[in-house]
Image 1 (cartoon, rainbow, N blue to C red):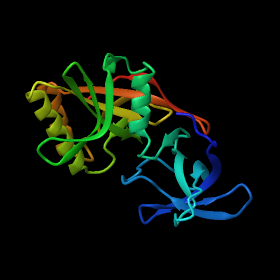
Image 2 (cartoon, rainbow, N blue to C red; image 1 turned 60 degrees about the horizontal axis):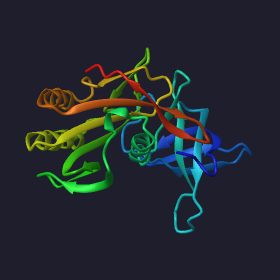
Image 3 (cartoon, one colour; image 1 turned 90 degrees about the vertical axis):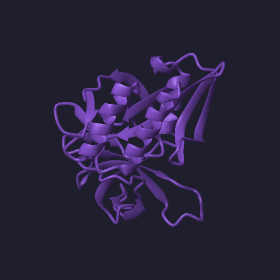
Length: 234
C-alpha cells in the first residue's frame, strides 16, 4: 500500500478519551488528531517518541489528521490504524505474497454472512467454492519478538470465530489472518492473560478446521506492505 502523500512525522504526547491523540509537530506547535484504534493499544506507544500521521483535506472533519504509526517502548514501529489491515491483506493476496490464499477468481469485501449478523472481511470465491477470510490487526508486543492478539477483551472477536466454525461446518473454507503491523514481530500467539475466553474459542476453532495465518508488515511513511509469513504459536 503506497502512501501518497507520505505520512508526516511528529512526536506523540498522549492518547486520551480513546480516540484522541495529541502530537507535537516539527514546527513546534501541537495538534490533536484522531486515533483510529478501539483497542487498548497496550505496549504500542510511549510519550515523547516519534509517530507518523496522515492529514485529511475533508473540511467537514472535526480533526485534521489520523494517527497511523507509533513507537513501542522497545523502539519498534506499530501500525495502529485498524482501517488498513483489510486492504493490506487483500493487496497481499492480489500480489501473491499470501501464498495460502491464491487461486480464487473473485474477492469481495464486507459481505454479510452467518447466524450472528456478521460481515466477513474478505470473501474469496472460484467455481462455487468460497473462502471466508477474517482479518485482525495485531500489535501487542510482549518481548522477544512475540506479538499477541487481542490487546483487550473482544466479544466481537469471539463471535467471528464462532461464525468461521459454522462456515467450516457447512463445507466452506474459513481462514483467520493476523495482520501483524509490528516491525519487531517474529511470532504470533493468543493473549490468554487478557482474554482467556477468546484463546479457548480460538483453539476450538483451529481444532474444528479454521485455518490460522499470520503475516508481518513493513512499515514506512511511504508504504505499508505485507511482506512475510510468521509462525503462529497458540
